[in-house]
Length: 246
Image 1: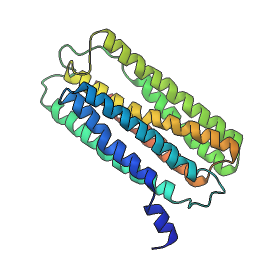
Image 2: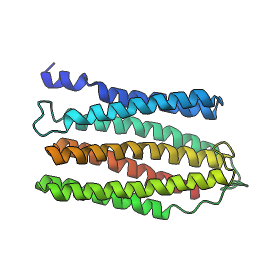
Image 3: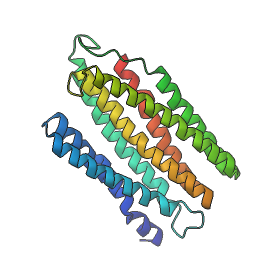
Image 4: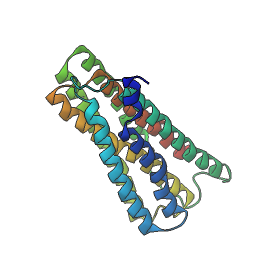
């Protein structure tokens, strides 16, 4: 096995991301929604959040600097694997949603809360994909200021989207609609929550990328990795959230 292959196969951080996000995170929701163990779910969720946070920082940092001795290929390939894994988790979530919804005679079900259509949210996500793509283009041109400014706009758009989601959760909770009130609330909290978790970690990645860009700039491979993740998160929201309102 070549040195390049040995390095690529021995990375700890992508494994922790896949293990934490793909195995432990779903169990936190299962403990709460299926078994009703709120304390255990909270403890596991805290543990998973810590693991994912540390893994994201460890994964991004060594692949960031242009003059790093590490290979520039493993980061992009690991991103593809991570996105494929998270896509499988998304497929499971929506398969359960479609199966359960197919058994209902009407949608939204009786007693479902009145939630505004996600048109604005979808437009924000779509706009953030455009700004991220333009940022990648500026990075290829060597325009560091343009790259950073467009990354900042992308981050601000994601923050605006996050505020909309958080406000909707607060309004639902204030109106007495907990996560287990009905199938609609379970679906809304679960789909929007999983998407929000991916978006939150994406914001951390964006923030770290901007900080590292000021120091030495980003490798082209790292920028590609970030763009893949941004487009994946946006596609999940653009494609997934409207299904709750159809």
